[in-house]
Amino acid sequence: MDKKILIIEDEKAIQKILSEPLTFEGYSVTVASDGLEGINKFHEKDFDLILLDIMLPKIDGYTLCEMIRRESQIPIILLTALDNEDAQIKGFDKLADDYITKPFSIKLVLKRVEALLRRASSDTSSDVIRYKDMHLSETERRVTVFGNEVALTHLEFEILLLFLKNKGRVFTRDDILNLVWGYDFAGDEKGVNFHIMNLRKKLRVDYIETVRGVGYRIAKEN
Image (cartoon, rainbow, N blue to C red; front, side):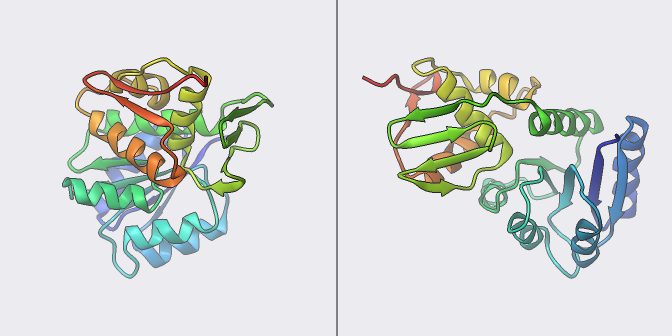
């Protein structure tokens, strides 16, 4: 079955730039031109991924992302002309999975869509990984700390899973891009930093260590 993608973007030219290559790649594409239409179409069918503009009429992208997250963990990629750090952090705070600034390369968009969909649908084992006061269930895609469930995006979950399966190993930002994002895109290391920052904030425990000048790790338990 074709993967279904919802594009919520008010600029007709960008709708076309996105929808035509995605359709050519075999995706089933639905387009919405404002936030209200977007949330209505989101409720009409089960989509596999959303490309979401931030600056939308009626309901802005940040608010829409928040609304969708109350109902679904569907992968969301934000699209925006805002390239400052605060805007990106705000997007990740709203639990978006990824962030692409305009103007963008359509090849990059296709790579990120492919990687996110692959991660979202990948088979996982039935094992529960326990680390100190944290439990991670791969099959349920569920993380708890001190018994309390922690809501993570797909990418945040995959980063944490990578660390827990390789305790003690230090991963560079390039390693994380290649192993979690599924592509090598120079210059996107800042996105890794944002996700690590959000993971730490959500987990509220100091399990992810920074190895200065190298990268990140979760230490082996004594």
